[in-house]
Image (cartoon, rainbow, N blue to C red; front, side, top):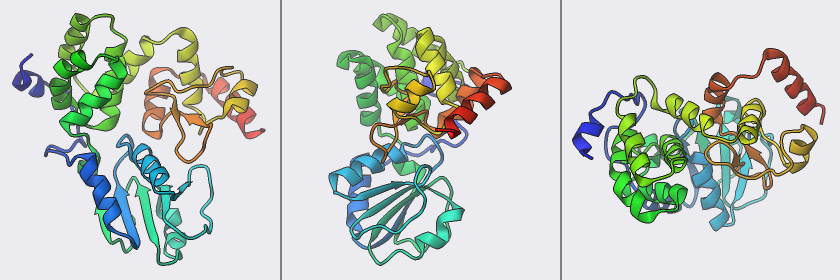
Length: 282
């Protein structure tokens, strides 16, 4: 496949960085470099902030606080990682003692930060796109062939790479995967929205129904999933059903995909309302 031809196709990536990304190894070194003060990690949904910072905090024995589930609160000393922060949390963040704090947000916050990590640094380098594709396909040689063109099409944006990898993994042969990848260069409109529909179409009925319903909820554990009649076997189903960072045993549709799933596989207003009421009553 010709990289120039695929890279110049009409698929649109409005917010994607056009410059080469920094490898995540270099990014982790940047996070380690500041031992006091605030590091801001600012990027839109789908950049992989939660996944990266959850792994980084676990490796360093840090406290991981997911503000989508847990209220802003005082915590013990040591490194603190705060995920899903926004303007509502700025006052609380400014009261934290002089310690290492990493704050992930979708938009810039008025905080005096020692350093700021941007979307460009969160994008995958080509080798990281290959690793993600290889994990999804279970075929290192096949991934090696496809990864350069996939990287050109997605600019390494983690959510787009994950969606495309899941879609390609649904194909039965290397030839089918190559043909499907070539077809992505002809997509008009947002590529991620197209891929959400394509991956949903390839799911088994029960898996599709789980994703469809879970997209209307903040997240569930096994007990809640069973009581809501979502599934009796709650496990990860990449890229849609993912572990919730900082909440062991919880799974959710990533925030950057919820609206797209709701658009491609909507519940009726009555069904969505009933599901949310049942969830809130737990």
